[in-house]
Length: 549
Image 1 (cartoon, rainbow, N blue to C red):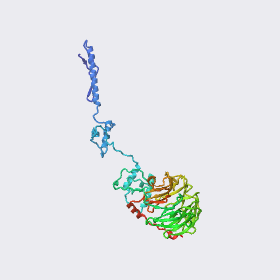
Image 2: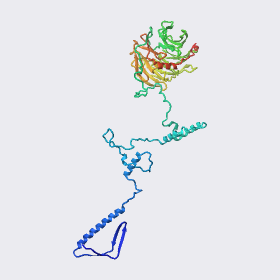
Image 3: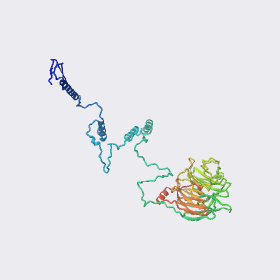
C-alpha cells in the first residue's frame, strides 16, 4: 500500500524522558482506487505497535532503582533479622551484621539418630519472670550491704532502714536476701520421726562397719520374789538412783544392790495380816517411802536402815506414791490424793478428791509441774504443782480424761517431751493412749489386745516399754511415737504387775504374779555414746538429809 500524507505546516513535538510523541496536525490522505481495505489494516497495526511501545516506555519510567527508606520491612526480612539477633550476643542494635540465613539452620542429622529434628536457636533457654521490687532489693544488698557504717549512727540507721523498708516494700530487706547462706539448720523438735527413706547419702557408712542393735529374748538375770502379792492395783517395785532395787514381799521390804549383788531386809510390819502396798525412792536415792495397808506412809533412811517417821492421814490402804522434791503424794483406795510436806511436822498440806475409786497410778512429771493420777474409775487426771504455803482441798485439775474403759494404773511421763503423758488401761480397755497436756488432746492410741499394767519410757533409744497381764503376760518394747513393735520379752508365767527402768537406762526389771523378777538388758548404749553421756551426767545434790524430820 502506498500511503501519501500531506502534512500541514503546523507540527508539535512532546517529549517525556527518552520517549518522543509526535502529534501531527490533521493531514489529507489520498488513496488509490481499490486499496481502501489495505489502508484500514495497516492503520490498525500501526496503532497497536504505538500502544505497545508507549506502555513499555511508561513501565521503564515507573521502575525504581533506589531503596524505599520509609517503607515497612518485608516479612522475610523480619524473620532473618530476629534470627540473627538471637544468635549473636554482644552486638549492639543498629550495627550491620554479616550473618547469613544459613547460620540459623541445624544439621540435617543428629549423630546417632536418623530422624530429623527441627530446632530453633535460643529455644532451650528459660528466663523466669522476676519481681522488679525483689531485683531492686537484691541489687541494693549486693552493692550496699558491705559498706562500712558509722559507729555512732549505726543503731539508729538500721532501725530507720528497717522502718522505711517495711513501710515501702511491705517487708524487711534483711529478710529478703537472695542466695544468702546462714548458719546451721535448726534441729528437729524432740520426738520427731522422719518416715522418708534416704536414697542417697554423702557420707554413707559401709555395710560391713554398720552396727545393729541386739535385744536378747532371754532375761539377763532372774530373781525369786516369794510371797509377792498378785494384786493389779499395787506398786511393789522401784529402782533407786544408787542402783538399789526395792521390792515388797507381803509385809516386808527387801533391797537388792544391783552393783554388788547384796540383799538387805529393810523393814517388816508388826502385824502378820498387814502388807506393803507401794514403794517410791526419792530422787537422790537416799530415802524410801513405803505405803501400807494400815493407811500409813513410812519414811526410811536406807543407809542407816532407820525409820524416820510414819505419817497418818488416809482412811484406806495407800497403793501409790510419787515424789516431787520435798513433796510426797500418796493415793489411797478411798480415791483421795494427799500431798505431804516431809519437812514439817504437820505434813498433810493438800487433798485432791476427784477420783471416786482407788487411785492405783500416780506420777509426777520430770519437771515437777504436773501430777498425773489414774484410778479404778477409769479416769486420768492431771493436777498442777502445789504452791509454797498452800493448804486445804482443791479439785481444780488441769485435765481429766475418761476415754479409757478400764482401770488406769499404767502412767509414764516422756523424759524428752515434758508435756507428753502415756497411760494404759486394764482388761476392759487394753489401750495405750498418748496425751498432750498442753492442748488436752489424745495424740495417738494403740490397742495392745492385752491388759496394760505398767508403762515406762526408755530415753536411750526413745522407746516406750509396756507390761501386760491377761492374755499375753509379757513385756513389749515400742518405738515412740510410731508405735512400731521393736521386741517382745516373753518368759513370765503369770501377769506382769510392774516394770521399772534402771538408773542408767540400760535395763528394765519386771515383776510378775509368778513370784519372779526378771532383768532385761535391752537398752545398752554403744561405748562411744555411753562415754559421751557419762560426761554430760552430773550428780544431783539434795537437801533431804537435813530437811526430813
